[in-house]
Image 1 (cartoon, rainbow, N blue to C red):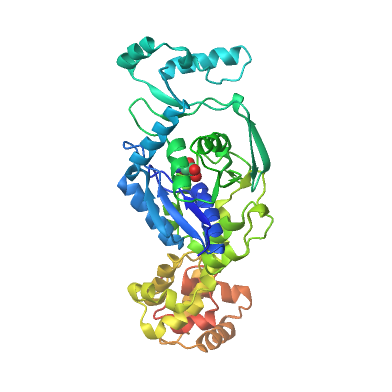
Image 2: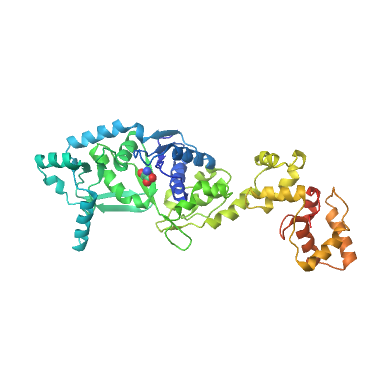
Amino acid sequence: MSDTVTRFAPSPTGYLHVGNLRTALLNWMIARKAEGTFILRLDDTDPERSKDEYADAIREDLEWLGLTWDREERQSHRLDRYAAAADEMRAQGRLYEAFETPTELDLKRKKQLNMGRPPVYDRAALELSEAEKDRLRAERGGHWRFKLDQERIEWPDAILGPLSIDAASVSDPVLIRGDGQVLYTLASVVDDTDMGVTHVVRGSDHVTNTATQIQIMAALGFGHPTFAHHSLLTGPQGEALSKRLGTLSLRDLRAAGIEPMALLSLMARLGSTEPIVLRDTPEELAEGFELPQFGVAPTKFNEADLRPLTANVLQRTPLAAVADELRALGVPDEEAERFWTVVRDNISSRGEMAGWWRVMSEGARPDLPEEDAAFVREALALLPPPPWTEETWGSWTAAVKDATGRKGPALFKPLRRAMTGTDRGPDMASLMPLLRAGPKL
Ligand code: GLU
């Protein structure tokens, strides 16, 4: 075990989507490559929106992908740690109480923008007398803000390069809400330092958070981990993906028959200088991975890319990995090997196995064009009854050719369609021994 510690820190307020997966995977690969520790941290300080059902779904999705974690942490179990850190910062005068309502803050921002000024919190609360604070506290309750040192905050970002943010352009972050709820910024800082996190990789929407978190870490007497901000995903045309992420949940992709290694192989390299190469295990993806391979530009994600990758995964999947599913479909064990060899090159999801087995066990229900129907009937009269062998296709089509004079595609295509219901599929000679019945016309 090395000292490297990373974490994936989703809020259990919804299902994981491809954007979350990118973050999870990058952190996972860093930990695994360094033989370090990968923590699953549930950012569940919001008691209303956090649900056990989502926490379970997050674990299930990660398990499905094979992204193992060494430890699980829940922020809701660590509230006393956050309270202690808040006390420490209050004692230093770095945490101050403010009382503006969301509407008042909104109004202030609008005024600032109208005057062409950046919408940064004006620190009016620092001017309040104790008596005014008492009154406001009783009237509406107060929240707590961290007082930023107004200097440039700099860090070498492991993806974006040297970064610097002027703290004067950032509002003092609210760390504790009026109802006492600790917000992510504080909880995350305390956790990352307490848990010895060495690398924090997250989306570039967190860059400003990082700047404030660096100051909060310093106020608590700590250095900061290596930060890296990956670019956000867009759709294939560069359009924002944020609205569509709901439909790109990992569980929807799983339900659509996407194979885990197809998804991981794509997401582990997308937006990097490295080619997308299908790997057999998540560990293999970690081997060739380096953070600096990732670029700054938004990363285009096209769901359609997952189909051919999934087909490729299936082509290299051994029988043992699908044997149980085949048994459940009713494929007899002694036919499973042949079934899988014939079918795996012709499906783009496991779900399609069932369709092939139906054709084989019950016979196809082909949709034949008018001009082929009579021909097919004539041909079927020349087909001996099952069981068929690998030779059947050759001898049958030869006999049909002699009888009808048809040849080439005009001969083979309608017969394939009659026997399988589709125009594309496995080599017919290999398929025939698996067919137990002719078509239902
Ligand atoms: N819960 C935060 C989020 O999902 C975590 C961000 C971070 O990695 O620090 O955005």
